[in-house]
Length: 95
Length: 83
View 1 (tube, rainbow over the protein chains, first blue to last red):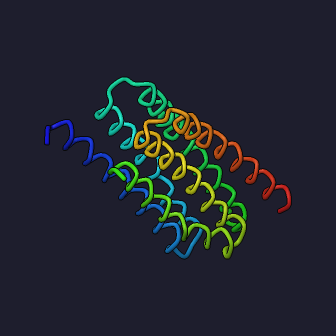
View 2 (tube, each protein chain N blue to C red):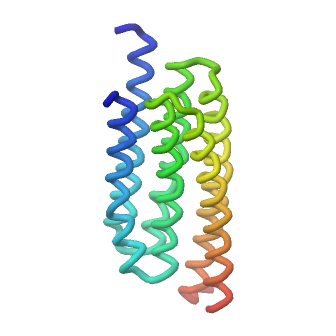
């Protein structure tokens, strides 16, 4: 097993573990804002998956799309989290 | 089955509790489940693409990532409008 394989599988396992953690967090938390905290790791999992694909296959066509998807997730997840948190805050009626 | 496909399978299986959240919780909390599910599906499709060697799944992952963002924003706007 080469160093490239070690890095690849470490990143794949990290991506899978982060996604499972995020899903479990959203399912187990009681409050809406608590659930929202767990949407963040999904973007990081996307970056880990992108890194794994680049480490495994280099600059392939799938690698390019993986970079694009990681960028999309890194930009859209915080925007969506912020918008949802604002809606939850408004709904709660807090000043 | 290779490691990529096992990881994609685990991620898809982890989404099952999100279905319960989306179905049983109030609309805004269910929307959080939908948002996380969109991101998770995109990553699962990306791993599936690498596991099978088919680039079409990577295109699909990109489309899911973008459209889940737009869809969640539309739902947020709708839920804000109906109060």
